[in-house]
Length: 189
Image (cartoon, rainbow, N blue to C red; front, side, top):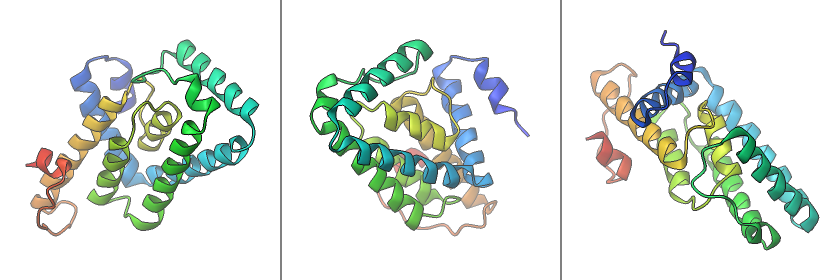
């Protein structure tokens, strides 16, 4: 099998990160890791939302911890989280919606199927300035902290393309379906 961990640690190439990210996402789907980690992530976000709904000090401390971790680890993020999102309710609302999306994915999607990638792609499309949510998607897909939203999106789209090609070849035993006009389907053709 392909040692994606060793290859990923040896590159910073955007194109290669997307390829290795797609391979890792497909591996996570196949070995059940994505389902397990999605459940863990949803529980963690739900716990954070519950604690933060009525505790501004917790939200501010969470923002400070997140900023420190991003600086220390040089985590890929599209934008630094604004403190105002944590003082107000925007971070809480974003994370509540993210946890709800994850729970819907967990209960209604086959993780070994193209529909899982569609669901993750849909979640990525709703992200504006994610930090924790991006880290959790990286975790679910088995990716490291160099994957920005754009990197994760490209990895998911490439994995979807690979699944479509494999499905047509009969490798996964999936039936070839119609088109749904999604951006991922366009990327697959």
